[in-house]
Amino acid sequence: MADTDIVCISPIDGRELVRRPIMTEAAIDAAITSAREAQKAWRSTTIAERASKVSAFLDALLAMNQEVVPEIAQQMGRPVRYGGEFRGVEERARYMIGIAEKSLQPIPADDEKAGFRRMIKREPVGLVLVIAPWNYPYLTAINTIVPALMAGNAVLLKHASQTVLAGERFQMAMDRAGMPKGLFQNLHLSHDQTSRILSNGLVDHCNFTGSVSGGRSIERAAAGSFTSLGLELGGKDPAYVREDANLDHAIENLVDGAFFNSGQCCCGIERIYVHEKHYDRFVEGAVDLVNKYVLGNPLEEATTLGPMAHKRFADLVRRQNAEAVAKGATAHIDTKRFAADAGDTAYLAPQVLTNVDHSMSVMREESFGPTVGIMKVKGDEEATRLMNDSPYGLSAAIWTSDVDAAEAIGEKLETGTVFMNRCDYLDPALAWTGVKDTGRGASLSRLAYESLTRPKSYHLRQI
Image (cartoon, rainbow, N blue to C red; front, side, top):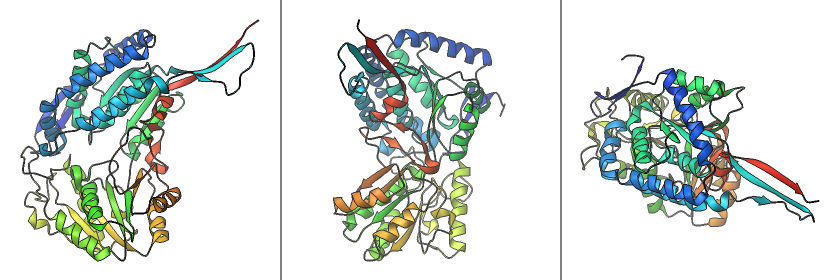
């Protein structure tokens, strides 16, 4: 592979699927210049005018679903039977469009003063760089693209090499919607080129979704440039099944939360703590459900578990599982039941582990794959302590019939989102954020508009 190309290797068969040349430095500089020019005019449009254009883009994107679903399977392995990502894309985009007018209204001063007009207005930051990941190539990108445009910014998108076609679909939809030329641009960039853009202060805000190491690289590149950052990084999201939980509901939803998309979900469940009253039944039920998965070609309707996006990701999970077993964990899934897992491909059998503890990497470090560890706990205090015993903090799920208890436990959890009786979901009305090594900033909700704008105060005295 030439170092001037971006290449996507399909996890289905290990063959090259897409190859694109990276941009020249001159082309990058031209793209930034045209984006700056387009943004000057765009920021002067009304929010209603922006909403019309962004809605047209969304409609154009949604119309591509039939082509996009198999493309996602080919690029990163998610089975076609699940129908892609556009239901969530539409929910998030329409919500953020709908709240833009109210979220971007001037904020009057708390007290009135005769002879003065005082307010705080929200102004667009200018040029926003979105660096999107492969695991949910449309859902993750839409979180920033839509509110950034609605706030009056221009947007540059750098998509992951594994899902390069998703970035091109965004551009296609923008063009079909008649978005002003240069306002949104999909760029094929190398890591070095992305670092140059940040280190030279060529953009005003960067939103990055990816690994902790990737986030650190972004911070280093942007150091001293005064570029603001939004970072959604690693996760090791826990679930707690309380004594008063609806057990059948918990089993069904937590298995799905752990294994959907082959476990390649930012807020997927990676560790489960179960009250001792339910522990044996929970494990039995979870193992039974996991054994029903069909691992295979994601383009086939019968497949419920596709390959991981790359063989190296599957190898990491294999190593974590092996380490846990070597330290005394019990692996409940016979991988021979999943013939597609030959041990040297991106196809990986799901696994349920018990007799695990926090000395094992599978309970501490991000797996991002189809494996989950289950531990027995005596009650809320032990569960809370274990849930917090992690360098990450994106979301945590509590399974209980007591709303007050869930809220009380949630107040003690070091996490960005607390769920009760559900998991692995983003509500666009709520801030999507994390703590500790999971990152900084917030997307979605009205708070997203705060990170994509800057306050400008008006102190107007009448004489």
